[in-house]
Length: 82
Image 1 (cartoon, rainbow, N blue to C red):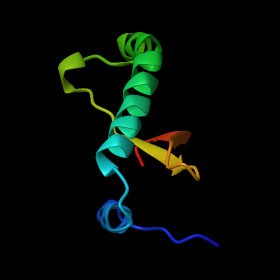
Image 2 (spheres, rainbow, N blue to C red):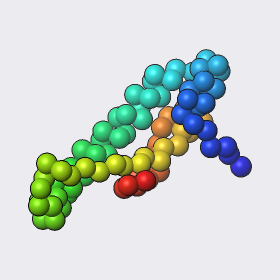
Image 3 (cartoon, rainbow, N blue to C red):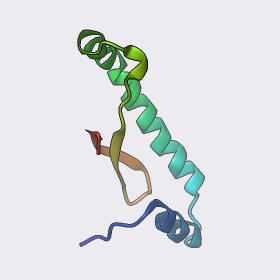
Image 4 (tube, one colour):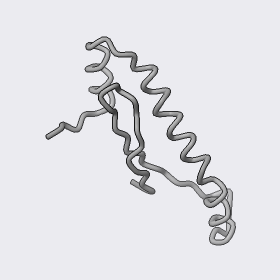
């Protein structure tokens, strides 16, 4: 069974093994950006229907990402208000 690590622990481990953590992080950011972009219209239309004061709305998303054997990031799921 795997171990859950903090992001700092993971980066230290991967750097010690000689892996390019910047490339991995750029891949994770691209996944997050594309996911948010794909849902922007739906989120905006829901906010327009249900929110009275638009300047006060916010949301926090939790992205569950897994790295495959070649350290490519894959999106597992996105949670709201994690």
